[in-house]
Image 1 (cartoon, each protein chain N blue to C red):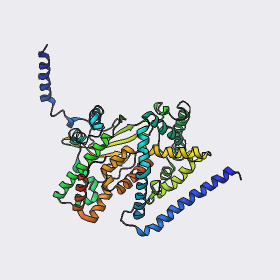
Image 2: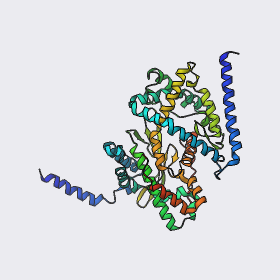
Image 3: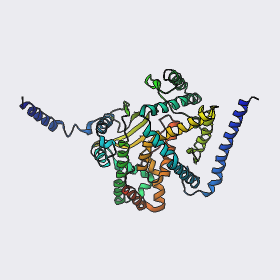
Image 4: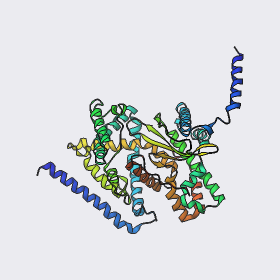
Length: 245
Length: 207
């Protein structure tokens, strides 16, 4: 077996192990559930992880993202976001294919071709202007499309809100992530860090709105996440489930 | 020449007497209403440096005068409460509507002051004249990202079309409160929810 195959296998194994660990933790911690929300059976554990992530964000990630946002001119910021968006578009296309939407998959791969070349390594998103709209897909959504239910809501350390289904999706997303696959370790680490900071900086405006809106930030983000994922799985047209009383 | 503006003024007065009150928002189609109000409000935000720099009283005033008249806060409150709303007395309900209104107006104003020249695309609405409940779809286009859906749910009332729900990327600004409201009511009753809304509304706006 070649070295590459071996590495891939180890990666798969590590991925499966972390999924199992999360599932096991959720199961174990179900015992110390604190509220009656059926979608959030491990609320006690989740709130602790949420507090941990919030602490990490407040101490390191948010200040760095703010500095990044303040220092870089908007066109450069957009270029960075486009660059990572272009890398993501390939697997967005793969997921669209897996979800039985070949026309969207073709459009996504077209985006990668156009933006990687005319758009100079993805820095300029010329494809959107040419009518190839950007999509948002991942393995969690693909599982959802295949009929896999959400499962319990879990807050993962570092990664934040997920459901059990989306945690499994996240494992595949990370394995498919081309940035994490770069062999030159310093380059890889710089790109991974840059992507985190850039993503976080894009969320700074939403941050303030959530602070303003939420009575309890934990449940506001939980319910928002669940609604958002439901919307994404149905590509923006979920069956309406609100009833008046 | 000086008399011409006066003449126009007089004509204008005639027109507003003839068409003013009845040809207002009450007669507009829901998608036209959403488009008109959004365009007008964003135009003001674009030109107003104070608002973009986060002048809270000024944004709040803009939202109160231009946006709030088209919202049905009583329906929004009932939607957010869900089944639990039945427990509330009429007096409690009135207080809840008032406090929830304050919270939503503050949130909406905060979102508005974060607006930075993103392009808004209005999707055409297909509806039959008999319809009384519609969803108007808009899209916020931003460079470097997937467009964000911004949808308005409107119902037809005697006073024109009124917005009773808004969804950002599929997340309802109204029903997103349902489970935390019901948790609060289970723990501390309707009055507990009123107290926590009042406490929230007394806090300083998020910086």
